[in-house]
Figure (cartoon, rainbow over the protein chains, first blue to last red):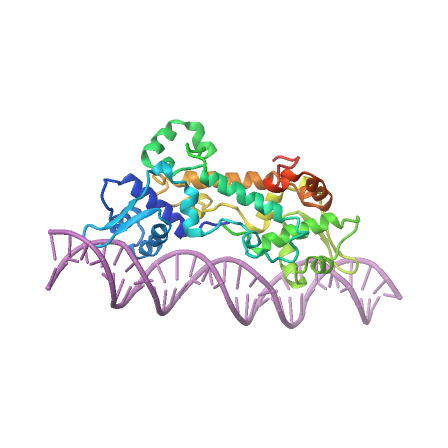
Amino acid sequence: MKISTKGRYALRMMIDLAEHDDGGYIRLKDIAMRQGITLKYLEQIIPQLARSGLVRSCRGNNGGYMLTREPEEYTVGEIIRALEGSLAPVACITENPNRCPRQEECATLEFWEGLWRVVNEYMDGVTLADLTEKHACRTQQDEEGRDAGLVRGTKTI
Amino acid sequence: MKISTKGRYALRMMIDLAEHDDGGYIRLKDIAMRQGITLKYLEQIIPQLARSGLVRSCRGNNGGYMLTREPEEYTVGEIIRALEGSLAPVACITENPNRCPRQEECATLEFWEGLWRVVNEYMDGVTLADLTEKHACRTQQDEEGRDAGLVRGTKTI
DNA sequence: TGATATCATACTAAACATATAGGAAAAGAG
DNA sequence: CTCTTTTCCTATATGTTTAGTATGATATCA
């Protein structure tokens, strides 16, 4: 039940892009410095975000990356799924065609589907904006929020 | 975000033990046959359930395994955790001492803790009894239940 | 033309997943 | 006591994934 570094670093890059947005492109080198992750590794991860349309890139001098939408228009779910693929906890849910011979009598299938749904609902209930610095200040005042984990964002998909 | 075969097979063994409970010990060989999993692999998994006190074992002739409680007194969460360990989606939540240097300013930590909580709450909201044959018949009549995944069991921890 | 950035691809070491295999130890039947 | 049957323990094998590192090509702008 682990999230890999690719998904986690992708999320941190998106937060970094949101927090350092100045209207222009942001160099990956700067993100790597701030986040303490090697440039080369991030170079391998961020193309997946670009391919999914979550960021826009520009090569060459003064090139870099920028968000394509406002932070509150991203759910964390779509960011993580862009790198981790489906978040299905067991393969037999998403295999196509679904070819497990015990599928009919399998008592656990429904349980795993429910887990899948719960995970997606939580992740799609938090927006990128919820994780940025400004929002963090707001939730810091809300002591209850710290204990209970993140509450739902404004956006629901 | 995958559950390994160990966790999944452990759950299926527990369901099998619940459904074939006749008051005596049940041989692992029979479980292996019914579940279509090799005996040798299950032999490696079930000791973890025994060590956690979820099943009782007896060696020798007429030996085998049996549940230590009623099916409705097990949550799926404790069964899965017995094999998968903590279901924390990122290591920095459970590492002791929690030694990530960015811990203070990390915007994502709270998010991952929330995910962890949601996963545990879902899993602890379903009991072993909810996954057994009798219960399955009941939910089959409830067509809404099929679409929505499993609803909470009777037991809440 | 040169500096600077993204982009594409190959490689690697270590860990993990998914088993398989061999035999020891215990318990009961005869 | 001996035999059979079962759990129990540990070692080995194999393939995949993870988490990076490395090398160089391609695009953009001054």
